[in-house]
Amino acid sequence: MKSTLYLRAVKFLLCLIFFTLSLETCLASNKPNIVLIMCDDLGWGDVGFNEWPVPDGHGGIQIESNKIIRTPYLNAMAKEGLKFNRFYSASPVCSPTRGSCITGRHPYRYGILYANTGHMKTEELTLAELLKTKGYATGHFGKWHLGTLTKKDKDANRGGPKAKKHFSPPQLNGFDICFSTESKVPTWDPLIRPKGNSSRTWWDPVQERKNEEAYGTAYWNEKSEKVTQNTKGANSRIIMDRAISFIQNATEKNQPFFSIIWFHTPHLPVVAGPKYTKIYKNYSKYEQHYFGCITAMDEQIGRLRSKLRDLNVAENTVLFFTSDNGPEGQKGKAPGSTGYLNGRKRSLLEGGIRVPGLVEWPAKIKPGRKTDIPCVTSDYLPTILDMLEIKPITNRPIDGISLLPLLKNKMTNRGKAIGFESKGQTAWIGDRYKLYSSVKARSEPQLFDLKTDPSEKKNLAKSKPILVKRLAKELAAWRSSCKLSAMGKDY
Image (tube, rainbow, N blue to C red; front, side, top):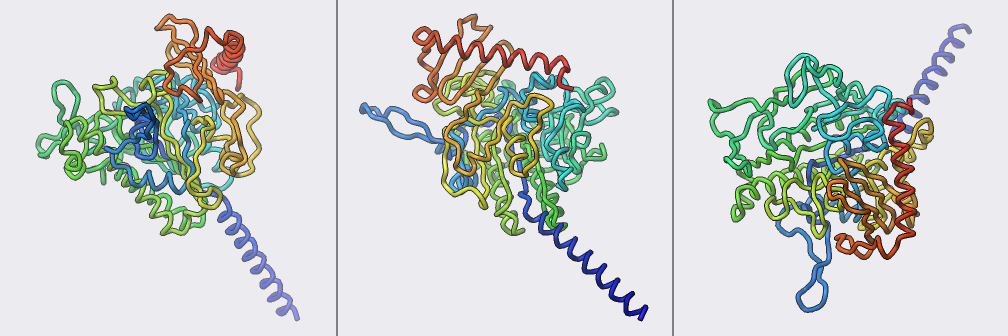
Protein backbone atom coordinates (compact mmCIF):
# COMPACT_ATOMS: atom_id res chain seq x y z
CA MET A 1 0.00 0.00 0.00
CA LYS A 2 2.75 2.40 1.00
CA SER A 3 4.73 1.51 -2.10
CA THR A 4 1.70 2.21 -4.29
CA LEU A 5 1.18 5.60 -2.68
CA TYR A 6 4.88 6.31 -3.08
CA LEU A 7 4.80 5.43 -6.78
CA ARG A 8 1.73 7.60 -7.29
CA ALA A 9 3.47 10.49 -5.55
CA VAL A 10 6.57 10.06 -7.70
CA LYS A 11 4.42 9.86 -10.83
CA PHE A 12 2.55 13.01 -9.83
CA LEU A 13 5.81 14.82 -9.14
CA LEU A 14 7.25 13.77 -12.52
CA CYS A 15 4.09 14.93 -14.27
CA LEU A 16 4.28 18.24 -12.43
CA ILE A 17 7.92 18.70 -13.45
CA PHE A 18 7.11 17.80 -17.05
CA PHE A 19 4.18 20.22 -17.10
CA THR A 20 6.33 23.00 -15.66
CA LEU A 21 9.09 22.42 -18.19
CA SER A 22 6.55 22.24 -21.02
CA LEU A 23 4.99 25.50 -19.86
CA GLU A 24 8.40 27.18 -19.69
CA THR A 25 9.21 25.88 -23.16
CA CYS A 26 5.92 27.19 -24.51
CA LEU A 27 6.42 30.58 -22.89
CA ALA A 28 9.99 30.80 -24.20
CA SER A 29 8.91 29.90 -27.72
CA ASN A 30 6.24 32.63 -27.67
CA LYS A 31 8.71 35.38 -26.78
CA PRO A 32 10.04 37.04 -29.92
CA ASN A 33 13.76 36.93 -30.53
CA ILE A 34 15.31 40.36 -31.05
CA VAL A 35 18.24 41.26 -33.31
CA LEU A 36 19.51 44.83 -33.67
CA ILE A 37 21.85 45.28 -36.64
CA MET A 38 23.65 48.55 -37.22
CA CYS A 39 26.25 49.70 -39.74
CA ASP A 40 28.85 52.40 -39.13
CA ASP A 41 28.71 55.53 -41.35
CA LEU A 42 26.38 53.93 -43.91
CA GLY A 43 24.56 56.67 -45.82
CA TRP A 44 20.83 56.77 -46.53
CA GLY A 45 21.64 56.43 -50.23
CA ASP A 46 24.20 53.63 -49.86
CA VAL A 47 21.59 50.86 -50.14
CA GLY A 48 19.51 49.66 -53.04
CA PHE A 49 16.15 49.72 -51.26
CA ASN A 50 15.90 53.50 -50.68
CA GLU A 51 14.42 55.58 -53.50
CA TRP A 52 14.15 59.30 -54.15
CA PRO A 53 12.70 61.59 -56.85
CA VAL A 54 14.93 63.50 -59.29
CA PRO A 55 14.10 65.70 -62.32
CA ASP A 56 13.92 63.67 -65.52
CA GLY A 57 15.14 66.53 -67.72
CA HIS A 58 11.77 66.96 -69.40
CA GLY A 59 9.91 68.81 -66.68
CA GLY A 60 8.87 65.64 -64.89
CA ILE A 61 10.13 63.44 -62.06
CA GLN A 62 11.76 60.03 -62.12
CA ILE A 63 12.59 57.72 -59.22
CA GLU A 64 16.27 57.15 -58.47
CA SER A 65 18.04 54.60 -56.27
CA ASN A 66 21.57 53.35 -55.73
CA LYS A 67 22.19 50.99 -58.62
CA ILE A 68 25.95 50.76 -58.07
CA ILE A 69 26.39 49.23 -54.62
CA ARG A 70 25.08 45.67 -54.59
CA THR A 71 22.87 45.02 -51.56
CA PRO A 72 20.55 42.22 -52.77
CA TYR A 73 19.98 40.70 -49.33
CA LEU A 74 19.03 44.00 -47.72
CA ASN A 75 16.79 44.71 -50.70
CA ALA A 76 15.09 41.35 -50.13
CA MET A 77 14.68 42.13 -46.43
CA ALA A 78 13.03 45.45 -47.37
CA LYS A 79 10.53 43.61 -49.58
CA GLU A 80 9.70 41.13 -46.82
CA GLY A 81 9.32 43.64 -43.99
CA LEU A 82 8.69 47.29 -43.18
CA LYS A 83 10.86 50.05 -44.65
CA PHE A 84 11.24 53.31 -42.73
CA ASN A 85 11.56 56.18 -45.20
CA ARG A 86 12.34 58.54 -42.32
CA PHE A 87 14.45 56.65 -39.82
CA TYR A 88 16.86 58.72 -37.72
CA SER A 89 19.98 58.05 -35.72
CA ALA A 90 19.82 59.84 -32.36
CA SER A 91 23.09 61.61 -33.19
CA PRO A 92 25.13 62.48 -36.29
CA VAL A 93 28.10 60.59 -34.82
CA CYS A 94 28.82 57.10 -33.59
CA SER A 95 28.93 56.51 -29.82
CA PRO A 96 25.94 58.68 -28.86
CA THR A 97 23.64 56.84 -31.26
CA ARG A 98 24.74 53.45 -29.92
CA GLY A 99 23.78 54.43 -26.40
CA SER A 100 20.33 55.54 -27.54
CA CYS A 101 19.67 52.07 -28.99
CA ILE A 102 19.97 50.36 -25.62
CA THR A 103 18.64 53.08 -23.27
CA GLY A 104 15.82 54.75 -25.21
CA ARG A 105 17.35 58.09 -24.20
CA HIS A 106 19.07 60.98 -25.93
CA PRO A 107 22.89 60.87 -25.61
CA TYR A 108 23.13 64.11 -23.63
CA ARG A 109 21.19 62.49 -20.82
CA TYR A 110 23.88 59.88 -20.16
CA GLY A 111 26.95 61.96 -21.01
CA ILE A 112 28.18 60.38 -24.24
CA LEU A 113 28.31 63.45 -26.46
CA TYR A 114 30.56 62.20 -29.25
CA ALA A 115 33.04 59.42 -30.01
CA ASN A 116 35.57 58.43 -27.33
CA THR A 117 33.95 60.45 -24.56
CA GLY A 118 32.20 59.23 -21.44
CA HIS A 119 30.92 55.70 -21.01
CA MET A 120 27.69 53.84 -20.34
CA LYS A 121 26.97 54.55 -16.68
CA THR A 122 26.01 51.78 -14.28
CA GLU A 123 22.90 53.76 -13.33
CA GLU A 124 21.51 53.51 -16.86
CA LEU A 125 19.03 50.74 -17.60
CA THR A 126 19.93 48.87 -20.78
CA LEU A 127 17.83 46.65 -23.00
CA ALA A 128 20.12 43.71 -22.28
CA GLU A 129 19.67 44.09 -18.53
CA LEU A 130 15.91 44.33 -18.86
CA LEU A 131 15.60 41.35 -21.21
CA LYS A 132 17.81 39.17 -19.04
CA THR A 133 15.18 39.43 -16.32
CA LYS A 134 12.74 37.86 -18.80
CA GLY A 135 14.94 34.88 -19.52
CA TYR A 136 16.67 36.12 -22.66
CA ALA A 137 20.17 35.11 -23.72
CA THR A 138 21.99 38.36 -24.50
CA GLY A 139 24.94 38.89 -26.84
CA HIS A 140 26.90 41.79 -28.32
CA PHE A 141 28.98 41.39 -31.47
CA GLY A 142 31.08 44.03 -33.24
CA LYS A 143 31.73 47.66 -32.36
CA TRP A 144 30.84 48.73 -28.80
CA HIS A 145 32.13 52.31 -28.46
CA LEU A 146 30.32 52.91 -25.16
CA GLY A 147 33.32 52.53 -22.87
CA THR A 148 36.70 50.84 -22.71
CA LEU A 149 37.03 47.05 -22.72
CA THR A 150 40.25 46.60 -20.74
CA LYS A 151 41.91 48.14 -17.69
CA LYS A 152 45.29 46.57 -18.35
CA ASP A 153 46.33 46.75 -22.00
CA LYS A 154 46.65 49.76 -24.26
CA ASP A 155 43.78 49.30 -26.70
CA ALA A 156 42.13 51.38 -29.39
CA ASN A 157 41.77 55.10 -28.67
CA ARG A 158 41.75 55.11 -24.88
CA GLY A 159 41.65 51.58 -23.49
CA GLY A 160 44.07 50.67 -20.72
CA PRO A 161 45.32 51.94 -17.34
CA LYS A 162 44.94 55.63 -18.18
CA ALA A 163 41.20 55.36 -18.76
CA LYS A 164 40.06 52.96 -16.04
CA LYS A 165 37.18 55.26 -15.15
CA HIS A 166 35.70 54.63 -18.60
CA PHE A 167 35.78 50.83 -18.28
CA SER A 168 32.24 49.80 -19.23
CA PRO A 169 32.26 46.70 -21.46
CA PRO A 170 29.13 44.90 -22.69
CA GLN A 171 29.30 42.30 -19.90
CA LEU A 172 28.81 45.07 -17.31
CA ASN A 173 25.75 46.27 -19.20
CA GLY A 174 23.69 43.09 -19.35
CA PHE A 175 25.36 41.02 -22.08
CA ASP A 176 26.15 37.35 -21.36
CA ILE A 177 28.32 36.86 -24.42
CA CYS A 178 30.36 39.37 -26.37
CA PHE A 179 32.86 39.61 -29.19
CA SER A 180 33.49 43.33 -29.21
CA THR A 181 35.91 46.09 -30.10
CA GLU A 182 36.07 49.42 -28.35
CA SER A 183 36.12 51.36 -31.61
CA LYS A 184 36.89 51.13 -35.33
CA VAL A 185 38.89 48.43 -37.10
CA PRO A 186 39.65 47.82 -40.79
CA THR A 187 36.78 46.14 -42.61
CA TRP A 188 39.14 43.39 -43.86
CA ASP A 189 41.70 41.63 -41.62
CA PRO A 190 40.47 43.77 -38.71
CA LEU A 191 43.47 43.25 -36.43
CA ILE A 192 46.05 44.19 -39.08
CA ARG A 193 46.98 47.72 -40.18
CA PRO A 194 46.10 47.97 -43.88
CA LYS A 195 48.32 49.56 -46.51
CA GLY A 196 47.03 53.04 -47.33
CA ASN A 197 47.91 55.68 -49.89
CA SER A 198 49.39 59.03 -48.88
CA SER A 199 46.07 60.88 -49.04
CA ARG A 200 44.30 58.22 -46.96
CA THR A 201 41.54 57.79 -49.51
CA TRP A 202 41.95 54.03 -49.89
CA TRP A 203 43.55 51.06 -48.17
CA ASP A 204 44.66 47.66 -49.44
CA PRO A 205 44.98 44.43 -47.43
CA VAL A 206 48.53 43.46 -46.43
CA GLN A 207 49.55 40.53 -48.64
CA GLU A 208 52.63 39.14 -46.87
CA ARG A 209 52.67 38.00 -43.26
CA LYS A 210 56.15 39.48 -42.68
CA ASN A 211 54.71 42.95 -43.37
CA GLU A 212 51.83 42.63 -40.92
CA GLU A 213 51.55 45.27 -38.20
CA ALA A 214 48.94 45.20 -35.44
CA TYR A 215 46.18 47.75 -35.94
CA GLY A 216 45.99 48.47 -32.21
CA THR A 217 42.34 47.65 -31.57
CA ALA A 218 41.50 44.17 -30.29
CA TYR A 219 38.42 41.98 -30.07
CA TRP A 220 37.48 41.14 -26.46
CA ASN A 221 35.12 38.54 -25.02
CA GLU A 222 32.89 38.60 -21.93
CA LYS A 223 35.83 37.46 -19.76
CA SER A 224 37.91 40.50 -20.77
CA GLU A 225 40.14 38.23 -22.84
CA LYS A 226 41.56 39.13 -26.23
CA VAL A 227 40.25 36.99 -29.08
CA THR A 228 42.74 36.21 -31.85
CA GLN A 229 41.26 33.12 -33.51
CA ASN A 230 39.26 33.45 -36.74
CA THR A 231 40.09 37.12 -37.32
CA LYS A 232 41.23 37.07 -40.96
CA GLY A 233 39.20 38.12 -43.97
CA ALA A 234 35.96 40.10 -44.15
CA ASN A 235 35.27 41.68 -40.77
CA SER A 236 31.51 41.40 -41.28
CA ARG A 237 31.86 37.63 -41.71
CA ILE A 238 34.07 37.40 -38.62
CA ILE A 239 31.42 39.18 -36.55
CA MET A 240 28.55 37.14 -37.98
CA ASP A 241 30.35 33.86 -37.23
CA ARG A 242 30.10 34.69 -33.52
CA ALA A 243 26.56 36.05 -33.68
CA ILE A 244 25.23 32.97 -35.46
CA SER A 245 26.97 30.66 -32.98
CA PHE A 246 25.31 32.56 -30.12
CA ILE A 247 21.89 32.40 -31.79
CA GLN A 248 22.23 28.69 -32.52
CA ASN A 249 23.22 27.91 -28.92
CA ALA A 250 20.26 29.86 -27.55
CA THR A 251 17.89 28.16 -29.99
CA GLU A 252 19.15 24.70 -29.03
CA LYS A 253 18.35 25.56 -25.40
CA ASN A 254 14.93 26.88 -26.47
CA GLN A 255 15.89 30.23 -24.96
CA PRO A 256 14.77 33.52 -26.52
CA PHE A 257 17.72 35.64 -27.60
CA PHE A 258 18.61 39.31 -27.82
CA SER A 259 21.53 39.89 -30.16
CA ILE A 260 23.20 43.16 -31.07
CA ILE A 261 25.28 43.02 -34.25
CA TRP A 262 27.11 46.28 -34.83
CA PHE A 263 29.22 46.13 -37.98
CA HIS A 264 32.21 48.45 -38.48
CA THR A 265 31.31 48.75 -42.17
CA PRO A 266 31.80 51.19 -43.89
CA HIS A 267 33.75 53.29 -41.33
CA LEU A 268 37.29 54.19 -42.37
CA PRO A 269 39.61 52.48 -43.02
CA VAL A 270 37.44 50.72 -45.59
CA VAL A 271 39.15 47.61 -46.94
CA ALA A 272 37.59 44.93 -49.13
CA GLY A 273 39.08 41.61 -50.20
CA PRO A 274 39.86 40.77 -53.85
CA LYS A 275 36.51 39.03 -54.36
CA TYR A 276 34.69 42.27 -53.58
CA THR A 277 36.99 44.86 -55.18
CA LYS A 278 36.79 42.85 -58.40
CA ILE A 279 33.03 43.50 -58.54
CA TYR A 280 33.76 47.24 -58.70
CA LYS A 281 36.95 47.15 -60.80
CA ASN A 282 35.74 49.99 -63.05
CA TYR A 283 35.61 52.42 -60.13
CA SER A 284 38.32 54.27 -58.18
CA LYS A 285 40.33 52.47 -55.49
CA TYR A 286 38.42 54.25 -52.74
CA GLU A 287 35.09 53.28 -54.30
CA GLN A 288 36.18 49.68 -54.85
CA HIS A 289 36.89 49.22 -51.17
CA TYR A 290 33.92 51.27 -49.94
CA PHE A 291 31.39 49.56 -52.19
CA GLY A 292 33.05 46.18 -51.70
CA CYS A 293 32.92 46.15 -47.91
CA ILE A 294 29.21 47.06 -48.02
CA THR A 295 28.50 44.16 -50.37
CA ALA A 296 30.50 41.86 -48.06
CA MET A 297 28.34 43.02 -45.14
CA ASP A 298 25.16 42.57 -47.16
CA GLU A 299 26.10 38.92 -47.76
CA GLN A 300 26.17 38.40 -44.00
CA ILE A 301 22.65 39.81 -43.68
CA GLY A 302 21.56 37.15 -46.16
CA ARG A 303 23.47 34.51 -44.27
CA LEU A 304 21.78 35.46 -40.98
CA ARG A 305 18.28 35.49 -42.48
CA SER A 306 18.92 32.08 -44.04
CA LYS A 307 20.18 30.68 -40.74
CA LEU A 308 17.12 31.94 -38.87
CA ARG A 309 14.96 30.05 -41.36
CA ASP A 310 17.08 26.90 -41.01
CA LEU A 311 16.66 27.08 -37.23
CA ASN A 312 12.88 27.55 -37.62
CA VAL A 313 12.95 30.78 -35.62
CA ALA A 314 12.66 33.35 -38.43
CA GLU A 315 8.87 33.67 -38.05
CA ASN A 316 9.11 35.05 -34.51
CA THR A 317 12.40 36.92 -34.77
CA VAL A 318 12.30 40.72 -34.95
CA LEU A 319 15.20 41.84 -37.13
CA PHE A 320 16.05 45.55 -37.18
CA PHE A 321 18.59 47.19 -39.50
CA THR A 322 19.98 50.74 -39.51
CA SER A 323 23.13 52.92 -39.43
CA ASP A 324 24.60 55.06 -36.64
CA ASN A 325 24.80 58.26 -38.74
CA GLY A 326 25.31 59.56 -42.26
CA PRO A 327 28.34 58.96 -44.50
CA GLU A 328 31.86 60.24 -43.85
CA GLY A 329 33.65 62.83 -45.98
CA GLN A 330 32.70 65.65 -48.30
CA LYS A 331 30.04 65.20 -50.94
CA GLY A 332 31.71 64.60 -54.29
CA LYS A 333 35.01 63.58 -52.69
CA ALA A 334 33.91 60.58 -50.63
CA PRO A 335 31.83 57.71 -52.07
CA GLY A 336 29.15 57.56 -49.37
CA SER A 337 25.71 58.67 -50.57
CA THR A 338 22.84 60.49 -48.88
CA GLY A 339 20.61 60.26 -51.93
CA TYR A 340 18.82 63.59 -52.29
CA LEU A 341 19.42 64.66 -48.69
CA ASN A 342 21.55 67.61 -47.59
CA GLY A 343 24.34 67.19 -45.02
CA ARG A 344 26.56 64.28 -43.98
CA LYS A 345 28.12 62.78 -40.86
CA ARG A 346 28.42 65.31 -37.97
CA SER A 347 25.56 67.42 -39.35
CA LEU A 348 22.00 67.59 -38.03
CA LEU A 349 20.76 68.26 -41.54
CA GLU A 350 18.88 65.26 -42.92
CA GLY A 351 21.87 63.58 -44.59
CA GLY A 352 23.70 63.39 -41.27
CA ILE A 353 20.93 61.72 -39.28
CA ARG A 354 18.39 60.19 -41.67
CA VAL A 355 19.68 56.65 -42.14
CA PRO A 356 18.55 53.37 -43.72
CA GLY A 357 15.88 51.69 -41.60
CA LEU A 358 14.23 48.27 -41.87
CA VAL A 359 12.42 45.84 -39.61
CA GLU A 360 11.32 42.30 -40.41
CA TRP A 361 9.00 40.23 -38.21
CA PRO A 362 7.17 37.63 -40.34
CA ALA A 363 4.75 36.72 -37.55
CA LYS A 364 3.42 40.28 -37.28
CA ILE A 365 4.54 42.45 -40.22
CA LYS A 366 3.10 41.95 -43.69
CA PRO A 367 5.66 42.05 -46.52
CA GLY A 368 6.31 45.15 -48.60
CA ARG A 369 5.18 47.83 -46.18
CA LYS A 370 6.62 51.37 -46.09
CA THR A 371 6.14 54.26 -43.70
CA ASP A 372 6.89 57.99 -43.75
CA ILE A 373 6.34 58.32 -39.99
CA PRO A 374 9.57 59.60 -38.39
CA CYS A 375 11.26 57.05 -36.13
CA VAL A 376 14.57 57.07 -34.25
CA THR A 377 17.04 54.69 -32.63
CA SER A 378 15.76 55.76 -29.20
CA ASP A 379 12.49 54.02 -30.11
CA TYR A 380 14.06 50.55 -29.92
CA LEU A 381 13.84 50.19 -26.14
CA PRO A 382 10.20 51.27 -25.61
CA THR A 383 9.16 49.27 -28.68
CA ILE A 384 10.77 46.05 -27.48
CA LEU A 385 9.44 46.48 -23.94
CA ASP A 386 5.97 46.92 -25.42
CA MET A 387 6.38 43.76 -27.51
CA LEU A 388 7.13 41.79 -24.35
CA GLU A 389 4.40 43.51 -22.31
CA ILE A 390 7.02 44.88 -19.92
CA LYS A 391 5.86 48.00 -18.09
CA PRO A 392 7.31 51.24 -19.50
CA ILE A 393 10.17 52.89 -17.59
CA THR A 394 8.74 55.78 -15.59
CA ASN A 395 11.51 56.70 -13.13
CA ARG A 396 13.49 58.71 -15.72
CA PRO A 397 12.80 60.50 -19.03
CA ILE A 398 12.62 58.20 -22.05
CA ASP A 399 12.90 60.02 -25.37
CA GLY A 400 11.77 57.17 -27.62
CA ILE A 401 8.25 55.88 -28.14
CA SER A 402 6.85 52.42 -28.79
CA LEU A 403 6.57 51.65 -32.47
CA LEU A 404 4.55 48.50 -31.85
CA PRO A 405 1.33 50.16 -33.11
CA LEU A 406 3.23 51.10 -36.29
CA LEU A 407 4.50 47.54 -36.73
CA LYS A 408 0.88 46.40 -36.42
CA ASN A 409 -0.17 49.03 -38.99
CA LYS A 410 -2.20 50.96 -36.41
CA MET A 411 -0.24 54.25 -36.28
CA THR A 412 -0.96 57.24 -38.53
CA ASN A 413 1.51 59.76 -37.08
CA ARG A 414 4.22 59.99 -34.43
CA GLY A 415 2.86 62.84 -32.36
CA LYS A 416 5.92 63.22 -30.11
CA ALA A 417 8.72 65.25 -31.71
CA ILE A 418 12.32 64.00 -31.82
CA GLY A 419 14.99 66.23 -30.27
CA PHE A 420 18.63 66.46 -31.37
CA GLU A 421 21.67 68.31 -30.07
CA SER A 422 25.26 67.91 -31.22
CA LYS A 423 28.25 70.26 -31.12
CA GLY A 424 26.49 73.59 -31.50
CA GLN A 425 23.59 72.27 -33.56
CA THR A 426 20.01 71.58 -32.52
CA ALA A 427 17.02 70.12 -34.32
CA TRP A 428 13.41 69.43 -33.42
CA ILE A 429 11.72 67.07 -35.85
CA GLY A 430 8.00 66.39 -35.93
CA ASP A 431 5.73 64.55 -38.33
CA ARG A 432 6.07 67.33 -40.88
CA TYR A 433 8.21 70.25 -39.78
CA LYS A 434 11.83 70.49 -38.67
CA LEU A 435 13.37 73.35 -36.71
CA TYR A 436 17.15 73.49 -37.19
CA SER A 437 19.85 75.84 -35.94
CA SER A 438 23.63 75.90 -35.95
CA VAL A 439 25.85 78.00 -33.71
CA LYS A 440 28.72 77.56 -36.16
CA ALA A 441 26.69 79.07 -38.98
CA ARG A 442 25.56 81.88 -36.63
CA SER A 443 22.19 81.75 -38.26
CA GLU A 444 18.66 82.23 -37.05
CA PRO A 445 16.63 79.02 -36.63
CA GLN A 446 15.58 77.51 -39.94
CA LEU A 447 12.25 75.80 -40.57
CA PHE A 448 11.79 73.09 -43.17
CA ASP A 449 8.71 71.23 -44.36
CA LEU A 450 10.12 67.72 -44.66
CA LYS A 451 6.98 66.45 -46.35
CA THR A 452 7.46 68.69 -49.39
CA ASP A 453 11.13 69.62 -49.01
CA PRO A 454 13.19 66.70 -47.61
CA SER A 455 16.32 68.19 -49.23
CA GLU A 456 15.94 71.24 -46.93
CA LYS A 457 16.30 73.84 -49.66
CA LYS A 458 13.52 76.25 -48.64
CA ASN A 459 13.65 77.97 -45.24
CA LEU A 460 10.10 78.76 -44.09
CA ALA A 461 11.04 80.48 -40.82
CA LYS A 462 10.09 84.00 -41.89
CA SER A 463 6.75 82.94 -43.34
CA LYS A 464 5.74 80.88 -40.27
CA PRO A 465 6.96 82.83 -37.21
CA ILE A 466 4.25 81.51 -34.87
CA LEU A 467 5.16 77.90 -35.67
CA VAL A 468 8.86 78.67 -35.20
CA LYS A 469 8.16 80.21 -31.80
CA ARG A 470 6.11 77.19 -30.67
CA LEU A 471 8.68 74.65 -31.83
CA ALA A 472 11.53 76.66 -30.29
CA LYS A 473 9.70 76.65 -26.96
CA GLU A 474 9.23 72.86 -27.13
CA LEU A 475 12.90 72.39 -28.02
CA ALA A 476 14.03 74.61 -25.13
CA ALA A 477 11.93 72.61 -22.65
CA TRP A 478 13.40 69.35 -23.94
CA ARG A 479 16.96 70.69 -23.71
CA SER A 480 16.32 71.75 -20.13
CA SER A 481 15.16 68.22 -19.32
CA CYS A 482 18.31 66.77 -20.93
CA LYS A 483 20.47 69.14 -18.91
CA LEU A 484 18.92 67.90 -15.66
CA SER A 485 19.57 64.31 -16.73
CA ALA A 486 23.20 65.16 -17.55
CA MET A 487 23.54 66.56 -14.02
CA GLY A 488 22.55 63.18 -12.60
CA LYS A 489 19.04 64.15 -11.51
CA ASP A 490 17.52 60.97 -12.97
CA TYR A 491 19.30 58.57 -10.63
